[in-house]
Image (cartoon, rainbow, N blue to C red):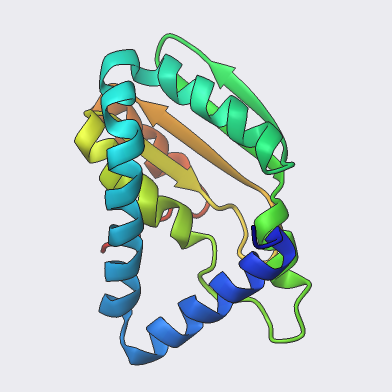
Length: 158
């Protein structure tokens, strides 16, 4: 297995190279990752809704050594990333972090949510600080209302 220190830095450079060819190439890459995630998770998220999202990201919190908090309400699931290990590694890189590094999360999450009938909103909050907030809603209107309140809501396919 590739250590995450190496993988994140590799990923960062792939994003830069694809963006240099044109943003549509980067979007296609993220969509392909989204297709893989749909195969793994869409049915579970369709059946289990935001509770299944909570269970998935609880596992990710541990596996990826994130510092964060999970919240499950009647309206949404929330993942508050206090210290993102991925962006932290990309920032601590002599090649420099890709300017839109954080957008890759919504790049793969958005197609998965569409296939699951759910609606995700990510507030990156800052592109130079390793923290963010992800919320997943069942109700699109509530997701849209939350997106309007965000400091820096990510829409990778606009």
